[in-house]
Image 1 (cartoon, one colour):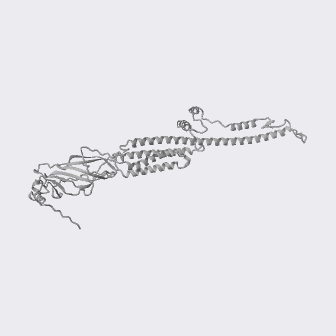
Image 2 (image 1 turned 45 degrees about the vertical axis):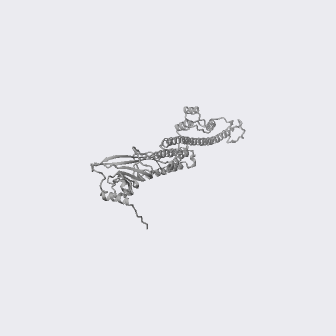
Image 3 (image 1 turned 90 degrees about the horizontal axis):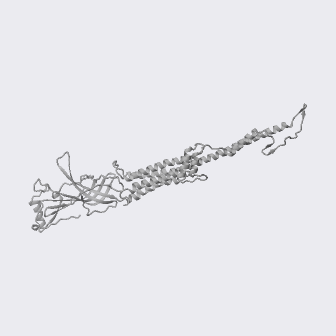
Length: 465
């Protein structure tokens, strides 16, 4: 166990006896000659370090010294009478001290200073600098979060001789302003000193962990339009990006105060990115819906074929194999009738059927030549002769029936081929319209992402610092 004994000389002992016993010093008395006199107390705060700033709860934690100085007329002496002692240190409990506290303290003890000794000069000047860790309520303006912390300040500067730089905060200014307030309950005017910090957040941490990942996610939204619809991951990618942005937004909401007075810059950016991501999901659903349509369940409207497959594709400089997408061809298509002509094979089959059913010529049918009269043996039954022309007519009728059957089959086959070709062409038109919408969304959302990122982030204060 160690103990310390303070040893003083005869001169200091005589000085203490003179100050406290001979002068009957009372620490409860205000050190003025007349009660009507005003005692001037100089208040300053020597800031040492910004320990923490809790934006969510709006509390700042500082370490420093509360520097107080005043003049006590009862603590004066002539140094030559006491061995030339001009300065003496006294316990703060033995001397009158002003009742100055941190008014907006958030600490449970309210007074967070340590009562140290004070320094007394021979002319009565007293310097009292108790150290402390000050936990104060600090309303902040989060409109530029996380790039800046807006605090206004004016008048005199605070003391920064012992200030230690913070890894997160860059101190821009430290100011003090004296003012006074009068409450309705009391007639007394209460003076106070308002200390204001002007600090700037070092944004490197937030740039690496939040801003850059969010920018990458926002551009990943546009890259989703480069995936083909048949891959099956087009919509999954957009939804995954949306959930990632929501996760970052929840992370930000956990470190900023629930304030309705201002919207932080980063929150504004996240809102814009979430809106773009939501619209991209809707656009992706529309693209997939168009891509998987076909002629069996959907007929392509004329306006989609004209304005999307033709005009919009021409504006986006998209090419389609086997199709001329020049402006002259598009205008010709716009002026032409939308009725489709039947295939040549079907027309030839119908003509063939008509010729076969209407002809009475028994001589030449599909390259088959019959003699005008074929010698068939004639038979007589009951003295009745059967003419050879009767057998020829029967064979012609049989041949007509066979040709009708062949013509119907040819018409059916040609019609199926034509329908399959038309259905395939319509399906390709739907897929091409989906490709055009996909390309339009790629350009549109890329432009929106670049514009919003530039307007919100690049115009934020201290973005490059």
